[in-house]
Image (cartoon, rainbow, N blue to C red; front, side, top):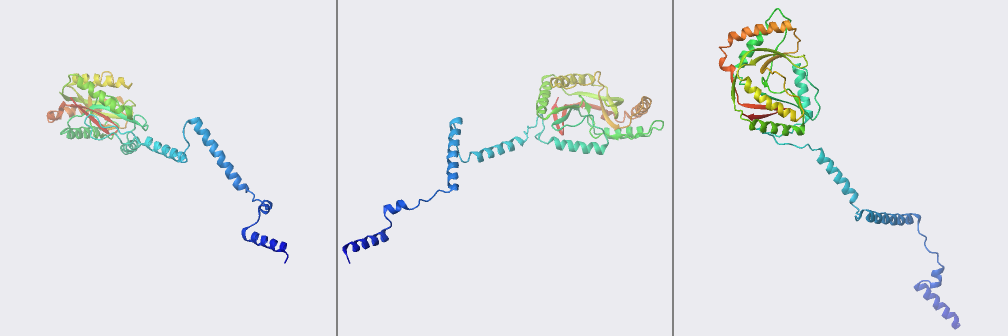
Length: 317
């Protein structure tokens, strides 16, 4: 075999063993980049540019978890803000004022529906019915109240009336006003400070005669025992309560107040003649048993109470 042919064969074997030559590599078609890969790289470049823009404008380094962290923080903030602020009890109240206004609304609505009484004003969530009062000792007065109620319901020459016993008899020292949730501790603390600042001490008082009253809306009537002895001391306390109410832009008590403890109520509207007749009969009955209940009719005022919603605050005298 000629020399040239042997050399050519040797070169071909080398090419087959070790790959194509540089010339053949150049002639071979180059792989093309897919559209998907191109769009992916373009998106990455755009994201890097946007991140660098954010870094320049806000001075904050971009973070891959910033979006998730932000949403978690927002959720945490919302949950925290939904929790009501629980204020500690004041003036001897051993529980926090934390009951929801919605629960109070439900309880009051059920109570009013069962008793048949008409609310003096609409209840709004977050507003609490508040009033100041004295609580008499009720040891033997319950029996007297029952006798007077039975006497009132036995009167024949007037319109039939169904009188109902009041569950918590008290002597009002204010109208019923509404306070916002956050105002209650400030009002009760202010009331205590003003009472403590004065020289008022506990004082005696007594129930001396019958009384007949109606509420401001004239839709409820009350049977009551009126305070005789102790009126001046109660007037002194009333001035303090009125002063506190004024500082909260609330209405003060009635002019020329007649301090009394109501013990029965009805939703019937009685004429003036019927009112006078009821009062006449009950005064006669009261005088006939006054000596029997003398110890119960004589009382001591030892503390002022303030009720707001379903919480009661005691201020000793």
